[in-house]
Amino acid sequence: MGSAANITAGAIVVLLGLGGCDSALSGGQASSDGRVSEAAPDRGSIPGADTSPPVLDSSTLQDGEARPVPDAATPAPDATSPVPDAKPTGWTLGQIPFAPSSSWNTPIAAGATFGKLNWPASTGYNYYVNWDAYSPAVHVSKPTDPLVQVAIPANWGWPAGNIPVRVAAGVTGAAGTDGEILIIDGTTAHNFWQFKRTSNTTATAQAYGRADVVTDSGWGSTSPFLSAGIVATGSSQLAGLLVQAETDAGEIGHALQIALDAALQKPGYTGEAIGGDGSSPSGIAQEGQRFAIPPGVSMPAGLSSLGQKVFRAMQTYGVFDIDVAGGTTVLRAQANAYDAVTMASLRNDVQVLIPLLQLVK
Image (cartoon, rainbow, N blue to C red; front, side):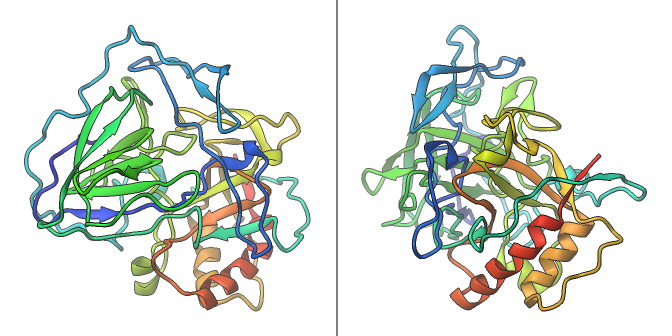
């Protein structure tokens, strides 16, 4: 997953605001303005370096969700140990993150077979794009930004400690229950959940994960058990995000992330997921699965320019089911980019696009 580092000159900070992480278990619903209310994701105490699947225990309920039970006896790596100072790497926001061999960056195989999913009919709000709430904001830090010590508890295999990051003055976690931030230091993407700035140089967060944006896959690892990020599957929140610098430059060169309405998410997880929080026996899919629009399906008429790029990405790379959402099934777009007109059009587009997705077998 990459390693914690003291952020130095040239560090890039990506602020993930309001990441719509499996909040549906609290029964969140779309508000009158169409935004989705989502509760806390499956982020809490997960065994330190245990390679077995995390155990969910109703005694650890928080914000309506069961948290994996920690194993205090299992040693974990030192999350706060320094790594070599970050040096210019040539990777910038807008480039495709994670290794070329990552499944996020690998096209659907020729000859792949597909299985239909029992998507509900569109109601106008049950398919959505999180943008102005519960979705990442991106902030590029400067070497002169304050060095902030972020206190984290033991979680997702990472030990308790302080993570030093450079964060611009006044920046804190996004409003809402998730309050995510993703900080890219050199090539390490640090992903915090419920990040709260307590002073110019201190902050707290309730969960943490990290991954190298050049060499890692964007998924967590099972041996040792460590998350790359704080969504339910343990993957990085940078994986599958719609980023304007990328979509403005051309096509989307990777799979997208999707969070399913809680009613659609089966229990358990599969594939490269290292965790999950689905709970609906009547659901249509399981976290970690990949969906795509089959190659023989024609592009629907009337899509926006961005919607057309999303269609082509869904057909070429697909989407990964990585989380639970409340009252709706969502894609996520960079919060401090795009504009209201573009997002309104894309939100209209996904009413048609998401139901075209089928399970990649």
